[in-house]
Amino acid sequence: MNPRALRRLQLVAVGALAVCAALLCWKGVSWALRPGLFLWADEIGNLSWLVDTPYRAILHVLPQHVYNDRPAGQALERILYELFGFDYRRQLACFLCFHFANCLLAFLLFRRLGVGLPISLAGAGLFGSLCTTAITATYIGASFDVLCTFFLLGSILTGLGKSWRCWYASAFLFLLALRSKEFAIVIPAILTALLLLRAGKASWRRMGAILGKRLWLHYSILAIFGVRYLSFVPHMRDSVSPQNPYYLDAGLGTVLKSLAHYTALIFTLEDRGSVTFLFLLGLTLVFAYAVIVRRAWMVLFGLVAYVLTLLPVAMLPNIRQPLYVYGPQIFLILAICLSLESLAAALPIPETRRWAVSACVAVALLAGAYAIRTSAYFGFRAAFCLNIRGTCARTAQDAAAQLSGIGTGAHLYITSGNSTPWLMIPGPCDYLKLLRHDRTISCVIMQPEKDLLEPYGRDPGGLGGKYFLDYREDGSLQIRFSARRF
Image (cartoon, rainbow, N blue to C red; front, top):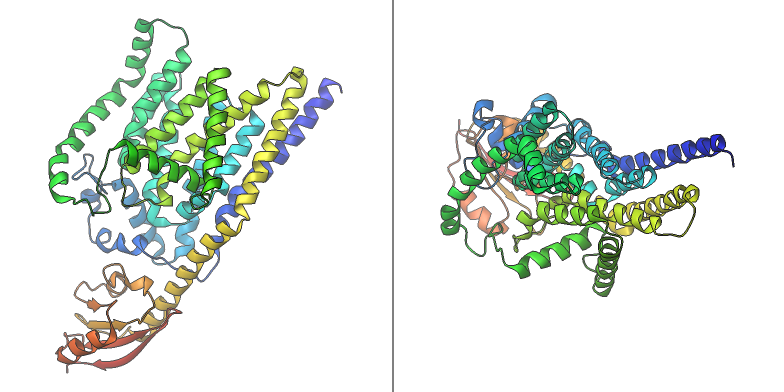
């Protein structure tokens, strides 16, 4: 085949791969854009204090406490609420812009670090197809994870630039990432490793000069925030018990167990026993071959970056969430893509055919991504989210219709039997307080009916009256008793 025809064939193949990757990224989250869904969990709970907090109190530079002090994500949630109210669909449409930007930035990072075009496209498609990605990208309460990943990738890419403007932009993005979620504190370490790898066989003095010139501002931010976080440690030790979900255990056993769990979770294998073990073993052997035999040091970098970005949550033995791996899994996918490139380069074939091998590898990766996207596991997780959001929508509809007349300081008693009143749990009943712009509403939920009827009978009722409501499994609400003061 002549070079011109080969070039045309390659362009067609790349175009087809790009379309497939884009479709997978879209299909991975588009299921959540259907009408009739509603906010739930932290999407309501976070708003309970954000709407009454001035932006100047939200957007502070230095952290005030060690956990959940994340002004960038909090500001985004408030802005989306002020723009669209409780309209989850429109909020999500804007929120997904950051997610799709992350898909693009992941592709650019793969290309920048030596992954070929076909496999880079497939890697981005794989990222967009994972269940962990879908759960995070469709949950506005995960604004911290999505925004932090956006700024983290931007900081790494600009940090590899050649001008001082890029390096300063990288430092600014590092600061934004750090104020989105705490795991971004490892960005200087990631950039240091990357720059050292790219420096090759330069002298130590030369490497030190490169790092100092490019990363001095990153190190300064790291030092300031590091000291600030360390100042919170004594209080955290005294106030967080071993039973607390956010209790930290830096033991090697806890960290390794968490890393194994999250790695299996990314590929929907966390509960598969021996299958999980064989998968992790195979992945380890592939990485070992790429690093030890092929000397593909960028594979090692990908693995180190994956561990570093997961390390803060890997030390939490009492809580492990799919949201936590949204950003870190990009580096694991990078390591996989680089390993596949290394394996393809080891084949004893002419250079002209190596591109075709890479294209075939990319097709196989996309096929794996499609298998994950269409799996029963993915479908079950999506159906769970859709069911809860649909239930919350029904609750919101009934609450708006039946409780529109309640006055200031109303007392609500909601019996739900064995059902979970998803929309009412935050607060409790933060949704009603936001809906009525009334912080004085009191709400009692999640108790046996007999334990609600007695206090309801004794309750003289607030100025807005008292209401006893039945909550059903489909999310519907019905007022059983009510009494008003006149």
